Length: 448
Image (tube, rainbow, N blue to C red):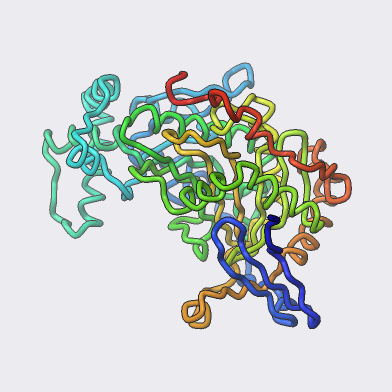
């Protein structure tokens, strides 16, 4: 039996889509798809030099406005990137972080959640670091100020944390399973006004490689620090219409004690057909001429059956877990994702969602990232029918991105190894995740 068609173009130009893994039904109605993308119109304001590095709480001059950091990525004296874990409060401003990993002040699942429901205790090294952090006057003042700010935001304006509260807050911060990866810059390095924010696509390819590698390392650490975590959700909300609380580049990682519906749907497909991601995603996209770009390690295509215009970026690696990708494979995913962000532009709200195999799963599946353009609002028709109206169909999305990718590559703004549109090989079954089917899956949790 063959799979059904997931894309159907009607005589009037209406495009009807079915997502092959979720069953979501999406229509792009003729003529509605020609509507322009609405962008906020305002007059740019020149940047105040006095605010450089201090535009929001995530900026580099305001390190103490966030909870104590778990790690930072810096450029060492030799120029190579260096990860420094657990910087003490007295040393926060001794170096400038390119990226920081900090706990989310208002986490989805708190440290108390894991302790109350599972008996989870802070690992010994983190407990010792929490005590050392608050033993420093700078560290005690930092934790006390952030803990008080959290209490005020929770409706306790007069609350003053005592010594025991400060230590408990420090332990909760370092035991957090909801972390942020925060980029250094609020505006691009050459910005003179606030017209453009520093987003993923305004980073250099090398910077974006470091961002992805740093995020993958944090993802792995969350799994290994908490034996009860079954899945780590990684996502990026860019701009407020996409759910961002601050318009400053940051990713979020949330460890949860469930797989989530997306994984369960993927498993159903894989049990019925282990090659489902090749046949229903990579191959189908190639047959329908929806491939946007590829390199030797990853493939990007215009997705179908999504509520919003969506680019899907798939790793070609046989390793299901991102932290078991080779450096070349990881860099290839980072480069292709960076190119999609750059071609999208920093003024379009987006959600970047990572999908990977849960740590306790055995079925192989590819690591994949979807980039959604949040340019429409789900309304009454969608709620009543569960048919979603997407104003840009996959072909129109491809045609918007491809010319911009050629321009960016010619300007040296994206990785030169990227092959765009018809340059892509589009060979069948490019995803190697099933290569180890029948044997042990490389990178299972037991191997460190």
